[in-house]
Amino acid sequence: MNIKDFYEMFETKARSRGFDAVEMTYQRVVDFSTKVFRGEVDAYQLSEEAGLSLRGEYRGGIGYYYSELIDAGIIEEALEAMMKSAELMEVKEEFIPESDTVLSDEADYHPALGEIHYPSVMPKMVAMEEALKERDAAIGEVPYNLYALVEREMRIMNSRGMDLSQRFNLNYYVLSALAREGNRGKTAMDFKVSNQPDLFEDQSFTLGIAREARDLLAARPVPSGKIPVLLNNKVAAQFLGGFAGLFSAEMVDKDLSLLKGRLGEKIGAGILNLLDDPTEEKALIHRQFDDEGTLTRRQKLVEAGVLKAYLHNSKTGRKMGMSPGGNGLREGIKSQLGISPTNFFIEPGNRSLEAMIADVEYGLLITQIQALHSGLNAVSGDFSLPAQGYLIREGKIQGSVDQITISSNIMAVFNQISDIGEDLYFHIPNGMGSVGSPSLLIEGISVAGE
Image 1 (cartoon, rainbow, N blue to C red):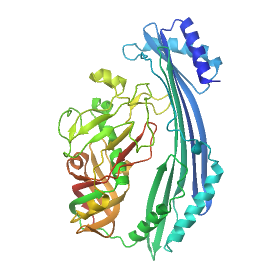
Image 2 (cartoon, rainbow, N blue to C red):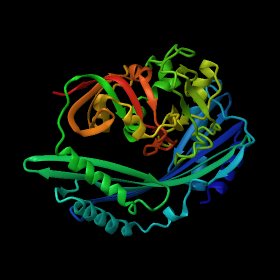
Image 3 (tube, rainbow, N blue to C red):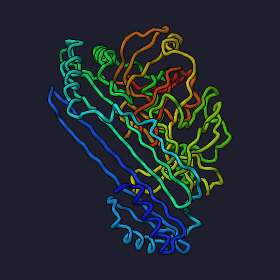
Image 4 (cartoon, rainbow, N blue to C red):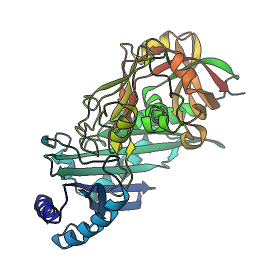
């Protein structure tokens, strides 16, 4: 059934049953992924899920109903359920907003991705595996070869004038190489994210993975100590993403953020500016509204090292007397309302990675980190992460490094940023946007090596 026709029928019947206002949120998600191993398809998954959330204000309360079936036959059942559940919640806690905003956004939907014939992807992945092995005789295995394509569609309509819709898609590719020399084996991995079907055409992609895997065969740990560490942009984006929740007003309210009570205080180096910007050109998703229907906006969370704002949804905004910035997120159609950044990133500087390396007398360039889920505590801010990369001496790369662990606290990292690159990169997005960073030079991170 056409979603607009369904909503109009739902609203008409709701009004006849005495509802003061109603709202419908529709979501549709298509996920395709496949893995190749040793020239054969190792996994293949295609899923499509759609559903809707209905809510309505009725006799001083607000009620809910969820369904994966979009059919006129569910409307009476939905209204009955909403009337009963409305007795349990007061409108003052939650309400259906007034809005005259009508928009339909498909700027981030790319027809070329929508036309991909899924089976055509696997031969390209096999070819990438073969190309990677041909790069270096030491590469005998490609442990990870994953391709994924994601499409999201959403629409929010209510009886107070709101009609918002958006559709977007993107694809990403993750590839690794295992190089061996005698009994020694080392793995390098990289990933690409794009809104175009060109992930298999970049020869430098396999070249970089093969070179790093080969380099790691000669890698050694460095002496333990506190030394300058240069995080390349991909590592910095992954790392920053692990601490994005610190800026959530919900986490602040629950005493689960180090940033509670620190608005207006210095929390980082003077060169640190951290933004949440749904319009950032280099990002792949540009949400104009959040999962509540609040219009998104550019927000400077940290300016010149000073904490300026938290991320809010409507609930935390009302509680703290702040205007929501369009950061309301529901993980699924039945999920409770949470908070997520849109495009959350450190503002880039004007220095190339090469220039940053040239200024380091002695330090490390980190190109991979592991154990983000277990080695990073987003509440305390502490982290201890296995890492690998390259040794820098007198401004030059002097060899590869592994079997090290980098440790510190995110607040110390923010305050010890001494240089910021120009190479802003965004990691694989979620439903609201993505986390990004340029390369970052951090003074004095603890490194555990030999």
